[in-house]
Amino acid sequence: MGSTQAVVGRVRTARAPSSRVLGKWAGLAPFLLFAVAFMLLPAGALLVGSFQDARGGFTFANVAHLLRPRILHSYLLTIEVSLVTAVGGSIFGFLLAYAVTLGGLPKGVRSFLVTFSGVASNFAGVPLAFAFISTLGRVGLVTVLLKELFGISLYDAGFNLYSFWGLSFTYLYFQLPLMVLVITPALDGMKKEWREACENLGASRLQYWTRVALPILAPSLLSSVILLFGNAFGAYATAYALTGGFINLIPIQIGAQIRGDVLHDPNLGYALALGMVVVMVLTIVGYTRLQKRASRWRT
Image 1 (tube, rainbow, N blue to C red):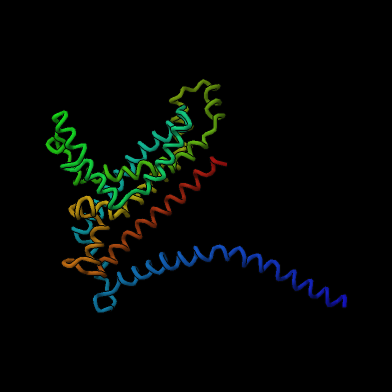
Image 2 (cartoon, rainbow, N blue to C red):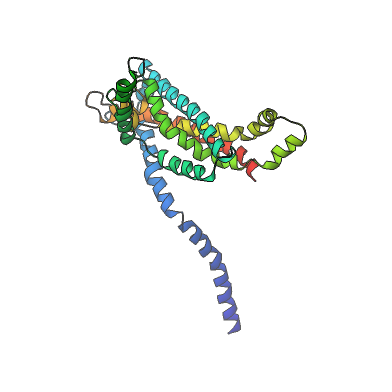
């Protein structure tokens, strides 16, 4: 009897670790299913479709078409918009985050800014385009008020909401608050002891920032720029709703090839999307590596 109980006890002991392991992985099951259904399978479909012709045969023609001047110009234009908005959003977002974390502003201002940033960073697409058209369009509220009250005509002065710079200005609405959310934890991680040590050694404020603070924040700042670049690079609805496809970004070209009536070549659209996936993968890899370097100063 005793030996039987000992055997049963050993079996239960052996089963316990395996059940705990299964319990841990069970929590990841919904995420894994989501990743397979909405990431891996679509990416696989893009990869396969990029090397198929209209009849389903294997071809390199779609990938070769990516070297066409029109398509290369679209990639360059998309990269330019993404870089301009990433750098601009990073600079002004960093200044805002610094003002509410280390600048001595009241805590209520920080709470308001962080809450607003959380909402504004997700406010994009058609509603954002409509909001800017209603505000800064040719008959927008601000445009009409400036002309009626002060005699200032924005469009006669050279401003155009439906241009490259107008689109970049619109993108800043969600790029800037995203930068605030991303860089605020890094600024919170700046220890007072570092500044005090610099002051005790006779360093000026400029020397502290150039030789201590900015080198420490550099990985976080660069990773934030990369994150903002990727955020703008994949934006579609805002650009299409605002410009009507006049600015030929890569996401707009993909939509024209897959859903268009005139430019209808789904396999070329898959190849264009595959090129975007490559750029986004490089962006994610760069962001991850820089975040690992930045995390060393937060411990």
